[in-house]
Length: 412
Ligand SMILES: Cc1cc2nc3c(=O)[nH]c(=O)nc-3n(C[C@H](O)[C@H](O)[C@H](O)COP(=O)(O)OP(=O)(O)OC[C@H]3O[C@@H](n4cnc5c(N)ncnc54)[C@H](O)[C@@H]3O)c2cc1C
Image 1 (tube, rainbow, N blue to C red):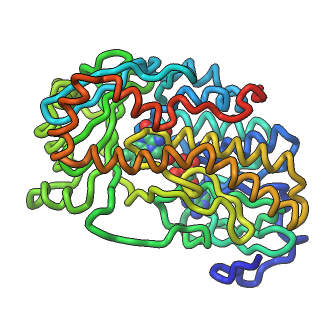
Image 2 (image 1 turned 90 degrees about the vertical axis):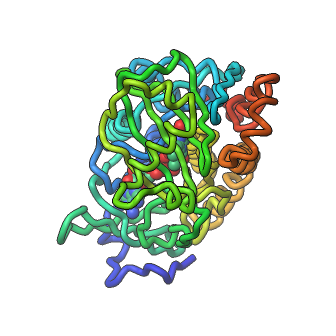
Image 3 (image 1 turned 60 degrees about the horizontal axis):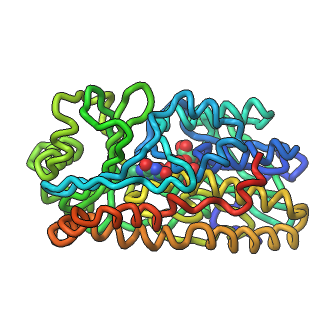
């Protein structure tokens, strides 16, 4: 159970560290969801977040209807409904000159979108209101596991930031997959021409039809648009590094080149953004790291993007983060994670339910992403979808939009 990559130098004993039942790293949807649910179960929880909130984030901001039971269990359903954009009733494919619309599957309820500057703040405030100790802006800089659990060293952001050591039997890494933290839970680094880079911008004054969520398929990438809070439109997309390099003119910023490319190649985007103004700067992140990964390793549980990531073409990452946070908290509260055997048995249970819930959509998303970024596929598929829009609804179904959580009725 030891993690030699990041042993704490001069690690204090467990007695010297601040003790919790669980330490959660990252206050995105996965981390905050697990922290809230464990705190409601009577656990003493520390939640560590490096960024001050509110903060905007590269994300399309759509939350599937399948996550409604989790929002309810988190005590945030009413706040979400008050602030989010309208229910999304139609999925619309915009590819080249084609615009094809189909009903969004509604068996698990309709999804809505809320800016991450609002959603993540609501989640973190809810956690704090339940007694979770929020360390923010603190960055987790080392984790050191042993038979008693793990010690996590955190550091206040900024030069010579204060250092604190947190000890817990259960440690959950939910710090996403796109930033490097030099923690043992980080994903291996890579850099290649087919990397997908994420971008996002908010607009006001657009012409999006109410209740529509366009899926954007353009040369070199894919994306989505949706109405979020306060009339803002969220446009987010991924583009392959090689495609971005090809379209960039000398001296032009990546976001300016991308904006020009989207409007020039995709009629639906040009029409939706005609007369619209940017509401804040473009944001960039990545490369993204789609794939299924171990949900527990070296004594640390993982939730959200760190556990598994679907290509954003399916707009399921927030739901997978919220739902994996719920699945993990439920598994931990049912098990007895006070010793190594209890934690390992909880890890096996969590791995099983995680795969059952998310593996299909992660695989389906890989296929959809490849099709969406290929102009040859647009030419062949768009006319087929125009004649049979039900195939679009089927795609939304395969992406998990109708896959309710197991035991969702058990959620309060
Ligand atoms: C272009 C694009 C569009 C997308 N659109 C959608 C969409 O419409 N709908 C959808 O459901 N999903 C979408 N996604 C996916 C979604 O954004 C992610 O899957 C989701 O944010 C994952 O949540 P998380 O809680 O795992 O991690 P994150 O949301 O990444 O949160 C991780 C948190 O950890 C913090 N952190 C990082 N390192 C440390 C550290 N060392 N110490 C302390 N804190 C740390 C970060 O500051 C962050 O707040 C999109 C993704 C992209 C790239």
